[in-house]
Image 1 (cartoon, rainbow over the protein chains, first blue to last red):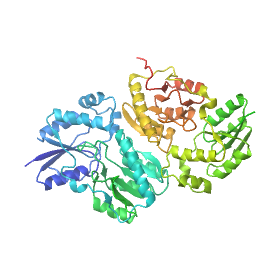
Image 2: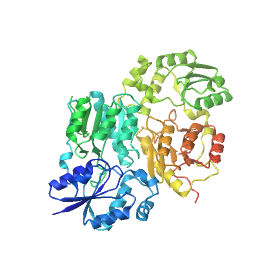
Image 3: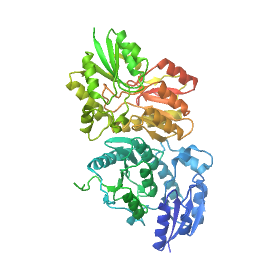
Image 4: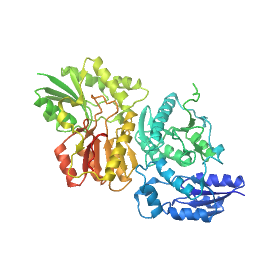
Length: 274
Length: 274
């Protein structure tokens, strides 16, 4: 029986992945590297160790000790910890110190390379989760209005440009105005900031990078994302269809329908209803 | 004697411009279109009328009435008012409704075109103010460190990319990490947000657009910009040299020196001190 290792950050993605791994007849073990790990993770893995992300050598040692070869990076790990030197071990510091520009790709690639030097294989996030990736289309009963379709298309182009610079992958738009762009603060903060600047009706867009590494940074949409939008009375939650993960999709769509929010898996070449 | 008209937004730029116009032997008249107009403006123009930006027809009428042909757009007018339909007259609404994407260039161009249809000539902001544009170089006693020079260069590239999408012209960087990008919230909010996310030492960068229209949106740096940086214990205030305006430069540099902040008029091809 195969065994996979998970380096688990925030959110439900590590839990869903581990559950699917089990269904597929694999053993899953995990190292939880963030404080607010989803409490459900412990119940779906054979073993869970908790080691802060900054103690990178211990994480490596734990993965060896748990005898995994295949490792998956799942769930967000805030980049802000770079500014808190307390608790960063010398291996972590050496990896990040060598980078002049600490954009997400450069940082993650450095950690992936280090895992590979240790003999691990870093797997693609989507390997066990194809059913979490909606094809292009509108998931909700409520369809976007004409104005919203225009904002979706504009937001897609802006978010792609941003993702091409590897600074963030999301933006908030309303009525042809880009209100907020994601940087280190993350998607939810971007949606909340944008929505707070324009009153009801903000359109949120999250995309993959133009050259997306399928091992990390694939867009993830979940109940938290929707809640951020609902809290600012937003009207559309859009993301790149065919690649983004939607977690807890049934509940997300039901809750969106209850609030008349449109949820859209967008592609620039999709057929837009007239 | 010539006479110039100013459509005056926030900040000291309209005041400085009007004072220079007078020194050059011109008469200056102004329409103040924002609530928090600099109180010094009234003292340096021959006539000042106050009309909110949304009452566009009245602004046009006032400029005709004050018998100006040459008009300058000076000082920031927040784009957020688009989301407050109260007080937008039918001419303002017609101009903005025709735009699918309300980025700064599209919006300003629509208003400039409308002024030109009315027979006005919209002048270049820098016409009377070449002495406000520092050439590339470090303005302060304190020189950037090697780490800060790297952040300046990285921030320049990111801000230029952002400005090329016409969403904002500023960003905040520290230690190779892009912390915040300007969108509708403006430069000061971007600096404060970025600085609040990383502790002391943020580097702020503000640039011109890749295809800068010299009649509007030229970067402006002033005491408010510096204060935003000081409030988050930032360490470098950088902007594009050779095009940006620095207002109240002597006081700005003195205050920066007092706080050991480096102020840098940057160009990517400038000689960086070893």
